[in-house]
Length: 435
Image 1: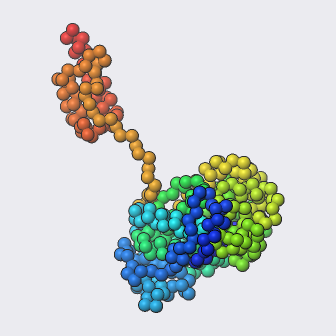
Image 2: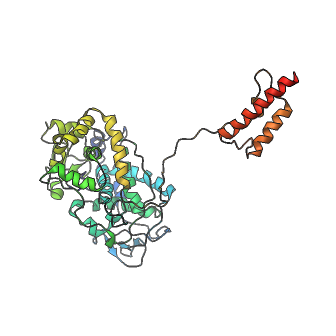
Image 3: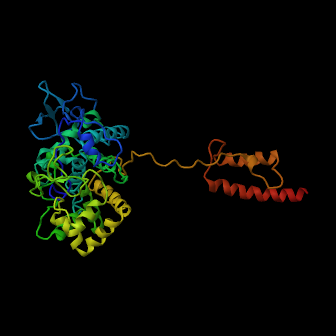
């Protein structure tokens, strides 16, 4: 999950020629690629002169050359157009409607800037500092928005992630009642899905940390070239509470993105797959179509036939370690299995260490509509050959309403079933005696 081991991508160029549309079409799975000529409007960091009303004080402490630290002020712009920030108190849960709108804005951002890899990496690195052996929040790390602070951005594993914050900051400013912790995970999940990956079972309501003093110490994210790659991966991911299957599944996200040697020390400056972009050209990708989420990573790592595709020591370990290999081999031949396991692992990772408000979190996806109970119609209930008399129907309705039911307020099936069994038996007996 460090720059070395996870997805790496440069900041998309503020303005891109429309010719990138054709270049992108061979990478992105969607049939239609939005034109990129307007991307500068999406990526610039200027804010409106009047910030939206805040549910509580927000903070956006990026690097000092982007933001100006000013105590006791809301997120906004000074007369010079530069940013002023505040380490704010704990924020309440994000607003569901604003999260949905923010997701649509993220989708447009992805169409215009092709920043899928770096947004995935941002969400991962915010969550990947979690330590299951520490109970207290926020000392335990995890998905709490701490990555927005300069002290954590300067960690070696987070090189270049300030570019992801630049892209998301206008969306954060537009939707003040969305926490950074939720925004980072929303952007990461949306990037996976928009690149052709599986639908992720995400939940939201994460609370932000409020000050840089609450950031985790450096060194919690994995390295790309440790002496014992498999053992190192287990040390890091086991500390998060993840297992071997989840380690391998999450590694599959390297199907997106490129590694840049100037940031991580790994990869070529340029290959035939990256020299033309989209986005800023350069770097070395793990797969040929490095903006398409599929199982190519496992196929390419296994074959290792293309010198222009990157294989890190931690990548190679997936087919060298016997336990990892079991899953890597499976994912190389069955994309459906990979998608299922990845979706579960990504959602689990995105929840690590988070404090939710409400405690159970909430979904912003429409849940399947439950079938409505059938309304009460007494005439439907008869002995078969003979319809119930009006008097009997009235008795049934009286019993039904006595339990709180009505024609427009059906009761759970068991209540009504018990009533009907008793009354049905009485009706049969009465009918037999009458005859």
